[in-house]
Length: 144
Image (cartoon, rainbow, N blue to C red; front, side, top):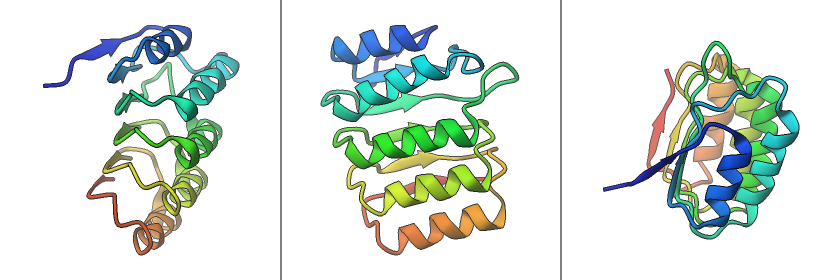
């Protein structure tokens, strides 16, 4: 059973990473206006060796969008412990899906990726599908 650490700011999420949290729920963080602190979180996640699950579900007040997806994709290329990433409802669009798919070409630890409700469209779905031809680690993909 996972014990989720629920954080209300990206700064708290960084502290949870530094303290060895296994699963972080950042659903209550607000991205809008917090791009720099989100980048700090992504940088900390890139070198983190304990966290296996991260939830950043979008809402009316928080959506990482294509730019946040780009930041996370760079992290996924470096991180070697994250196995589950939930980005439901972040409106990453096809551009964000393409950057995530690019990261999936080299990432060998993500086994579960949830991209539901992200408006990725046919182009984004095609990019993810093409990445899965190379990536044999991802076993659960949710995108509706």
